Length: 194
Ligand code: F6R
Ligand code: ZN
Image (tube, rainbow, N blue to C red; front, side, top):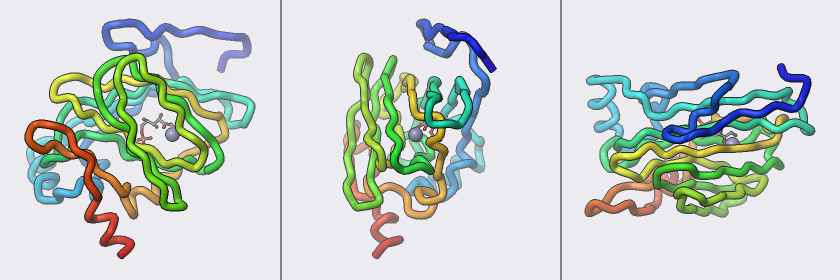
């Protein structure tokens, strides 16, 4: 780990960091139960465990004075009518924020709080999204062809809670209807809490 200030490059065409500590690749099989169309999910998985998204992490000590950063790349595609997306999570230390800067592509950040608030923000090049403390988040690639490429920064001690979302999902889904993205209620979420 670096003990003096350091730099890395995020260059076109793909904005992958010039150096990083960790490269995460998440495929369809890691999203069991997350896509609302379970039949489409099963059929697709039987054919191929496709790569949905990748994360390049620049890691620092997990303490409050440090910052974690990196690049996430969500590839284009759909499971049924639902776009490829990240697992989504709350930060384990709920009271920690995060910033996302979109380099390339088009999509949405789907967010909600344990208190019942929700928000969905568009993501496109040049746009900065500030996610407040307590807001769980999932990125969705709504482009038919392009990668959704984002740079993110969050506090070193935040940690990740995936279990809550795995169990309940998010209140809102982003699906394609008549060739366009649409934000709809998640029927599975209502059922799980109904
Ligand atoms: C970190 C963060 C991002 C995500 C990345 C992948 O707090 O929000 O780095 O980790 O976009 O998404 P998940 O972690 O939900 O698989
Ligand atoms: Zn996060």
